Image 1 (tube, rainbow, N blue to C red):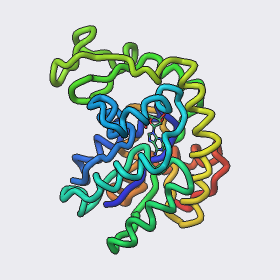
Image 2: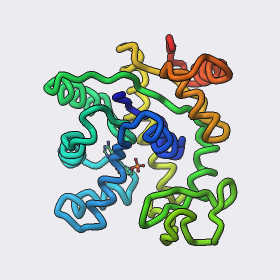
Image 3: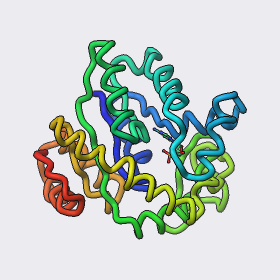
Amino acid sequence: MRLVMLGPPGAGKGTQARLLEARLNSPQVASGDLLREAVRKRTALGIEAKDYMDRGVLVPDELVLKLINERLSQADAHGGFILDGFPRTVEQAETLARMLEKRGETLDKAVAIIVPDEEIIKRISGRRTCRSCGAMYHMIYDPPRNMNLCNSCNGELYQRDDDAEDTVRMRLEVYAASTRPLLEHYERLNLLALIEGIGRPEEIEGRILVALGRLPAGDGTSNAAGARSKTGAQSKN
Ligand code: AMP
């Protein structure tokens, strides 16, 4: 399947993309992870991107597109992928559509996870990420067994620079101005699935699988309807 995950920072796109990766046998492709890797490796692209990321604003398209194009050209992404954090603007979505068209591919669905801003700020300020494997924890809702160590690989947990509260507020503003219009864009293309993002990760995954037609309709559909009224978008899914 070829999926795009949408939603504000901290909505749970990464968590859901990782769950779906195993379920759909398609790799998660996270633009933020690709950028952070470039920053860590101190590549020219990473050095240029870092300042934008630290401020919580969007990195210029040409940098992000280069990373995404390279990643989607790798063999494991040929059968499908779960894009997380890309596209973030209507322009990026149009570029993605052209990129896929050249390969004779199309998107199957854009999954938007809906979570209110105040909940996002609570979630992100407690968030910790593993330096080695990228696993995420929350110091209150989903704490690691050992204070600062990852349960799976024992890597060090850290707070991302851009997870500080002021930067989170800036990222939410950028989301509202640049990324939220994507919901309308994918709605017009009849690809949008709106998912209520409050609940346990497995519940939210269930709602997504219902929207993708991989599970029979159940609880997920009524929650998606609730999400719809909060965004004003009129999903048919
Ligand atoms: P994320 O991990 O998705 O929250 O992304 C972290 C930061 O990376 C964002 O605040 C942006 O500065 C940058 N970034 C990630 N994806 C994109 C994108 N598609 N376009 C522009 N900047 C991006």
